[in-house]
Image (cartoon, rainbow over all chains, first blue to last red):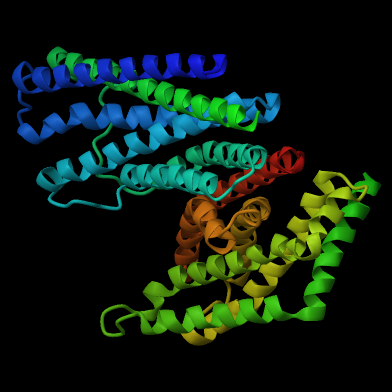
Length: 232
Length: 226
């Protein structure tokens, strides 16, 4: 085994440890959310989805920004590790946007009475999902590593530029989505017990996101090291 | 500056000359646009949905879909006989290459739109008297940005295995803002609403054009440089 493969192995193990921590944390969030957090007066039990839905949306957006920033840095520095990092973040982002898109309708059915509506934020997150999907599909359709890195970096940056526009145009549509209750100019209008559960969940999700990206990145490095070994 | 524009016009002129001489892409894109219009008419339940209610959506679906067909052609043309390598070796900047391609694509898509519009009036009985100016402005604003993105992505998609599928997959999410804006403006224009109601949307469309033409221009050089 080469030194590069050893180093990649360490990264993968670190990533897996983070994923395990995140999953444990998530299990803790489930217990806290169901057992120690009050039931919301108007929505009842379906409101509990909030604790898994909102952090997934935050993580998806975070992953998306990471893809964009790593893409800009790649075009500037031309370091293949940045490309691998962007790819890892996009894969993790796809997972989190899928969680966001599945938990949303599960909550919407009992509360809105419909699985799907062309509401502003739903449409917005759906397009986030499609952007991740297009990015992944493009990577799958290109063989040459240099070309793949360059092309997907361009698409990653374009996606980041697009997001504010989709945001703006869909927001000009009437919305039924709950208005922000935590990140808004005035102080959060959420009881402390609920805010605590949300923050806990956010922490668990972020650890999970970092774990996914790290694992994926380590696996990519290992594959590169192995390719170099085979070639050399 | 004069040097740049000479190169830009030379590249755009070359693309358009190829188009005028072969005419295949133009004729196909027009026939495609007409077919979309016809299919839309039959995809509508005449008893419950009026032609007028559907008209703005039909117009913009037709424009964007036939525009996409046109954009596929832009770099596919250069793939044959490795013409792209020749272009990249020519002593012109990447900026000039992008602008030339962009200009040719704009001309092509505008031509398709110019022919589709009368067909749309004919098939959907839309009354454009008095709003033609506003509609043309909307068409220009909504097309300028998406053609820039299409030109950039066409250069990417042409190198992939499923170019014809990859381009729509990449570009459709980017069509959301211009299509939403253009449909909103068109339906208000057709309903005879006052200018104040559409000005905001026109500003968003203009901002979209400004941002994406700039970003595409900036990204084209690193995209092409190995």
